[in-house]
Image (tube, rainbow, N blue to C red; front, side, top):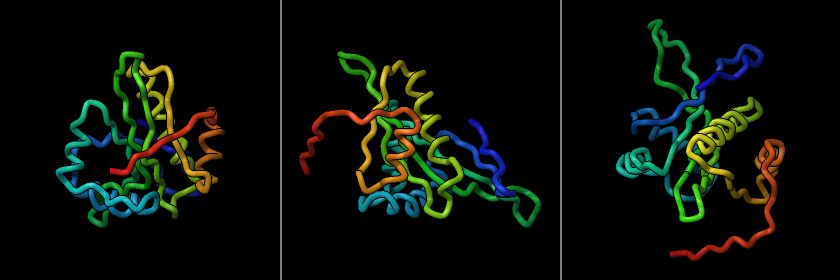
Length: 162
């Protein structure tokens, strides 16, 4: 989908849509998702179900470093985001969920690139708005979202634990 600017000699990253529960993706999610939530990362069957859903699109920011043999190793996942878009009687809704960039990779524009790719995909799906939630304690994330034009809504969010 695109590349990052080369920041001080770092390897450029790209934003891609995950299409298969590849051997490199499961451990990457197991490493990244605990940086966001205490929820367990998906197992292979759950990830395949997510990737096979017409409603979910998983974006990954990856970089590929040259291998010692001169080829390319599996990609290194720097961050991930899931876009959920679905049709209701009132129109297409789009939600951005589970945005996480590895703590060691923050500041490279990865979150901005992931969100930008998701917003474009939501637009292409026919959504008129994109929603997301972020805990107040995630100050950098909240600053990012505001800087990208997301506006804080006056609403109540309710949750029923099952």
